[in-house]
Amino acid sequence: MPINSFQEFQHSLERDDRSLPLYQKIKEFILEKIAIREWLPHQKLPSENEISAILNVSRMTVNRAFKELTEEGYLFREKGSGTFVAEPFQLTPFFELFPISQEIAIEGNQYGVLILERKRLAYDEVPFASLFQLSKEEAAEFPFLYSEILYLSNGIPIQYEQRTLLAAFAPRYEEEHFTHHCSSAYLLNLVPALSQKHRLEAMIPSPELKKILSIEGEEACFKVIEKLQIQGKLRSYAEQFYPASRYQFHSKI
Image (cartoon, rainbow, N blue to C red; front, side, top):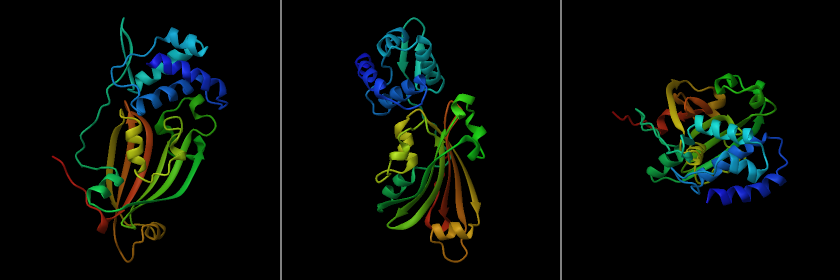
């Protein structure tokens, strides 16, 4: 039952010495329960008053967590009934663009991964930070996680990815090794309510990109810009590069 989970959370909250605001910690807790399917769609949550009493925090703190999760599509409210876990939603894309780990599995090939870089970034270090529409409080300190990952199919580079995402959106992202699933699959499994937007471009790779993807001679690349959003709010931005000779896109009409 959710109320029992909040009672358990109260003990861990006392030991949590991170500098995150209380409402953000409550959001993280609720998101984790939804992600691991402990709380299922249409399951009712305790009231704001009940949670504030259990956690010994103000009702306004709980209200902010509930309000933001409702706006982001994780929860929904019914007047006179309470707050419930929302149904995940999916969009059907024109291109059947699956996470690269799934694509490799579909082809019957062996999936591999190399994490080239991973770090936290301050707001001013991200050129497109304004796309995330953060408040001053959210933009403080180091709100972003950044990763560079190379994915392999049968030991051959198939995708190079540069990803920037909100640290509060997926706080355990920097601990993941992606040994079984790529970053896109991880985020989509973590947050079922995510919608996806993709833009496909053709490009001539730079010498550095050719080296990373082990491209010899003159060969074009595909570049996919992936945006993961919740109700129009950007949560993750990735640029993914594919050698044209090693990857095919499939259209869906």
